[in-house]
Structure formats: structure tokens, C-alpha cells
Amino acid sequence: MKKPQEGLSRIILLGGSSEIGLAILEHTCATGAAISLVGRPSPRQSAAADRLRGRGHTVTEVPYETTMTFSQTQEVLLQAKNSLGDPQIPVSAVIMAIGTMGETGTPEVTLTTNLTGPTLLILASQWILTSQSSGTLIVLSSAAAIRPRNDILFYAMAKQGIDTLVRTTARSLKAQGVKTLLIRPGFVSTTMTSHLTPPPFATTSWDIGHQTAKALKRGRSIIWVPGIMRWIILGLKALPRSITPPSLQ
Image (tube, helix red, strand yellow):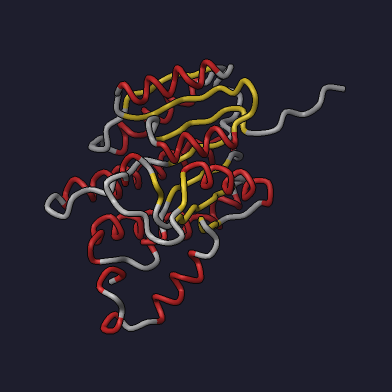
């Protein structure tokens, strides 16, 4: 008898050039997986696609912009699903990893990229997964969603929005056969944050991918990376902002 294949076999990654998204994908995908990278066309995304193909996966790229309407976003998800091959075979997972730290002077960009676009992507992903009554929706949130800071206020507001959306709809999705996994990392050392000094308990894309794979096997619905971030954030929430160090406000 053939041994069952471990890992996710048909995956849509929303944010095809995301270091964290790609790390999650590579830690969770099965050998010879069918993968659709959804995102703005770029050399980074194409390089990621070529790297995955070199590892034996079948990879397609689907163009996407965060300014798209909901109906356009649904079309993108449908195109991504169909690009995986036989449309009758269910999608194993959708990974939502689109986002940017943004700039304080451009709140409209930060909110569009981190809240409006991802919200529509999550809703469209739920539509795809509930239509097949199976699969897992993996969403990259942030510790900042639970305890916002002034210096990344618009980013934190956006993460609060998608975190709330996933938590609020999780029970309904479960009743329809769809699992959810919400990931709340602290500071992640990536190209996007390379200009910043990593604080204590900073994590990496690799560790998020590793912890995500463990969480899927254990059937978890929410994880913090590293795990200690949960207790740090709870402690900060209990601390009045008037006596909180400026760097943590």
C-alpha cells in the first residue's frame, strides 16, 4: 500500500514574494505540490517560483493588486484554484501573507495593503474553501493586532481588522468543514525589517514556517511566534500606557 503523502498538496499563497509566506509554504507543502503564487508580478516572485520548481513543485503565478474590487479578488482566487490543475480536486490551503509595514505619512497605502486588500482576499478565500467544504485558511496576523504601538499605528489597526475577521468567522467556517490558523508573530527579521534593530525575542521567517507546520499537525487555531510573545503582550496590555516605555507605546 502506498504511504500517504505528508504535507499540503495544493496551495495558494497570497503574497507570492513574501519571505514569511514562502517559509510557511516550504515548511508545510508536500513533495511535488501544486502551488499558485498570487501577487504583484515582480522579479522576486518569479525567482521564488523558479526556486520552488527546482524543488520539484508545479508552480503558477497569478497577478493581483490590493486595489482590486471584491469581484475582481474572487476572480483572482478562482483563477489561482484552477491553475493548480483539476478544479474538482480541493485546495489544501490558502496562505494569506500580503502586507507591508508602510509609512506613517501614507496611511492610505498602509491600510489598503494591510487591511482592505487582505480583507477581500480572506473573504474570497473563505468563499473558495467553503464551496469545497474542506481546506485550511492560514492568515498571517501580528502581535501588534492585540497590543498596538504608536510607531506602527496604521499597520496595527490593519492587523487588528483581519485578526478580528478570522476569529469571528472561524466557528462558522469550521461548521462548513474549513479550518483556520491565525499566526501572531512579534518582530520578524526579514528584508522588510532589515533597516531596524531587532528587539529581544525577535523571530525569523524560518521559525514561523516551522511553528506553523507544528500547529497544523496539532490542529491549533491560533499561535504566537515565539510562544512567549503571548505573555509579553498580555503583560503590556495590563500596564497603563502612561508608565509604559515610549518604545513600547
